[in-house]
Amino acid sequence: MKALVMYASRHGNTRRVAEAIADGIRTFGTVDVVPIDEAPATFSGEEDLVVLGGPTEAHGMTPAVKTYLDGLEFGALNGVPMAAFDTRLEWPRWISGSASAGISHRLQKLGADVVVPQASFIVEGKDPVLKPGELERAKSWGDALARTVRAEVAAAR
Image 1 (tube, rainbow, N blue to C red):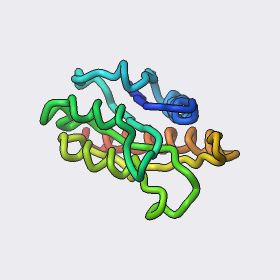
Image 2 (image 1 turned 180 degrees about the horizontal axis):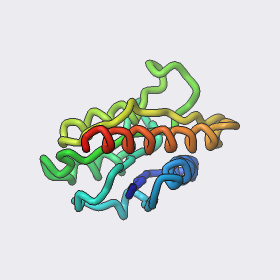
Image 3 (image 1 turned 90 degrees about the horizontal axis):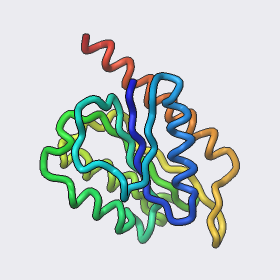
C-alpha cells in the first residue's frame, strides 16, 4: 500500500494527529506525510489512499485547506481513495462545526472516492493541546483506513 497524509496545522496538534494516522497506515505499506503547502495538485494514481485534514476554525476549514481545495482542477481527484479528519474542541458538533465534514464534501465534489466517514480529534484549552488518548485513537483510525482500503482493493480483484 502507498499512502499520502496531508495536513494543515496552526498549533502543531493537527500535524501530530496526521503523523499518528500515518503510523497506523504504515503497518500496511509506505506513507508520506506533508503539510498542505507542499501537497500535490495532481495525483499519479499510484496512491492507494490519500488523507487530508486540518483544524476546525469558525465552524469549518481553515483558509489554507480551502485554498488548497480551490486550487484543484475539477476531476483532479477522480477515483482517488480519500479520507478526511480534523481537530476541534470537544463541543457538540453543531456548536464547534467540523472541518472534516466540509473537506469530505469538497473531496466528493472533486471526484474522490471517500472511503470511510471522517473523523474528529479533540483539542482542549485556550492554547489548545490534544486531549489525552487522541494520538492513540488517530493511529487506530489510520489502521482502520488502511484495512478498509486493502479490503476494497482485494474485493475488486
